[in-house]
Image (cartoon, rainbow, N blue to C red; front, side, top):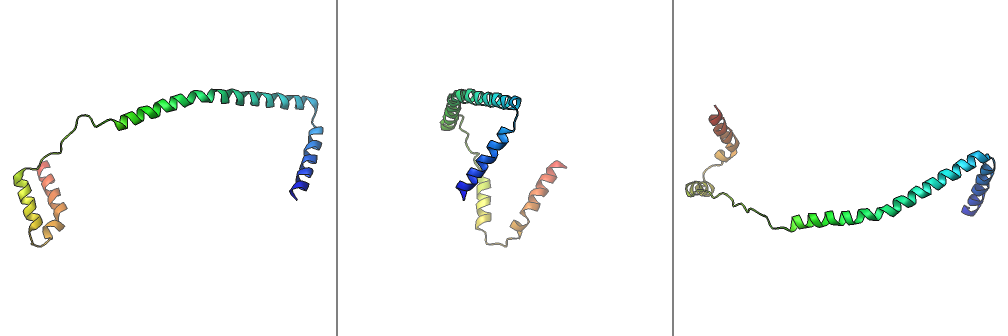
Amino acid sequence: MSDRFERALNKTLKAGAARIDQRTRDDLARRRRDALDLAENTRSRTWLWMPGGAVAAAIVAALLAQPYVGKQTLPLVEADTADVDMELLLAEDSLELYEDLEFYEWLDVAGDAG
């Protein structure tokens, strides 16, 4: 089936090409040459991008591999606050305080603002 289709297609294309005038054929041939030349020139310049990509990848790798400069320490919690927090965590009281914790935080911030 495909062989018969290919032969019919080839015959149709050749018949169509025979009906094209010489001026159009010349124009198509010129455009084909121009496209092939452009493709060849583009392909020959592609290798110039490879070293640039390798250099960019090396820079990114060096930056990521570099140890963190200017190490920052985490802020230490004051002992009084830590004791209070531990007492809250170990307390067996009801959880009402924790349920309304966001409200108390908002109240604290709103009190400072006003």
